[in-house]
Amino acid sequence: MNHDRPILQVALDILEVDRAIQIAREAVEGGIDWIETGTPLIKSEGMNAVRALKDNFPGHTILADMKTMDTGALEVEMAVKSGADIVILLGSADDSTIADARRAADKYGAKLMCDLISVPDPVARARELEKMGIDIINIHVGIDMQMMGITPIELLRQMKNEIDIPIAIAGGLDANSSGEAVLAGADIVIVGGNIVRSPDVTASARNIRQNMDAPMPAAEDRGSIEAETRQLLTRVSTPNISDAMHRKGAMHGLFSVNPGLKMVGPAVTVQTFEGDWAKTVEAIDTAQSGDVIVIYNGGSDQVAPWGELATLSCINKGVSGVVIDGAVRDIDDIRRLEFPVFARAVVPNAGEPKGFGEINAEIRCAGQTVRPEDYIVGDDNGIVVVPKERAYEIARRSVEVEKNESRIRDEITKGSTLSKVLRLEKWEKR
Image (cartoon, rainbow, N blue to C red; front, side):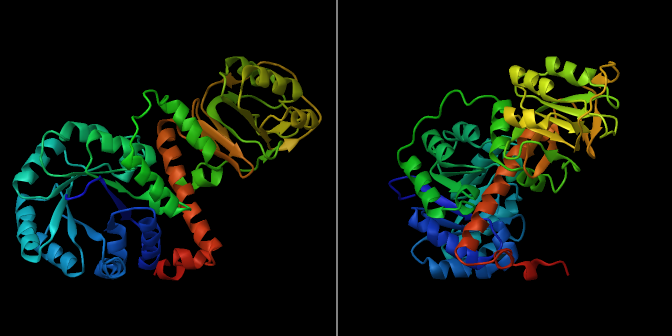
């Protein structure tokens, strides 16, 4: 590639060309080498986005992520004439499309990168593409796969000795994993969200650049998926999580007894009846450290199935918090104990421990279905229920929501407004 060090490429997967230019300018200050006109930007602004980036950054390599599957020559020609130095095709395109694109690239003096996203046998396809004259192979794990915890680095290790052309790597890379990718043999590291959505683009790009220039081996033990899920859900807010779930999962009608406290953990569910608090406190013995007890109290807010002594027992067990679709009492003591409790009402009277009900059955609580081990997250905004089978994915998507909001917040702080940043008039449904 005629570079003394690995190339850092920023992927501008946003919708507005003026925002893309500003973000690219900040990323250049942080040390990025190549600027990619992302597919969303091309779909939103067309070839004008490529032209604008070329005009504003004439000394940088400009890529156009066309994701070409057909009409190879036509799409390469339009991208190159608009200012692209490298055009990105899909590796799953037919060989005839690849060959046609190659002829056009040769005619106009451009290079071709092939993106192997969703290719069934990427190593074998990379060998074929190299023989067909592709200049760069891109090992790419898409956003939806990233949310499931799939990374491209292991595939990079497999492919490094199979082909002789440069290899790019893309898919959720940050400062640490970018350094790991360089150690695994990446020639080009492509970073999108962890630069583009950062509140400080320049600092984020510089951090990644420094880690690529002096990479350190990754820690051997990264912890369990469960530990990472909890850590990510603790980092974000319940509005972030609700947005990541397409505005679903929120309980309603409950309030925080202890404002300012947050709880995160798998659910231990309790189905009980009005005033019967036996199963609610027995659930404490069932719960593990870090769990959240979720109680449906038969639809009643007249009699409390929970109070100070149950709360103190939870603290002894390491329970993360309690949700009650019903009433609570002793809230002065609970506040003194600084324990997260969410409830529908406060009353002074308790019922009797009759023993009716069930622990760890599927329940309906404050408008949401809750199953044992679904993740429960509560803060001052409310409570969301995260399905256990999607908890890791949703946690990661919530972090992406948080990153995007951080970038928007930064632009508003610099003098813009929310409607202007989001181009609401342009994107209103017609």
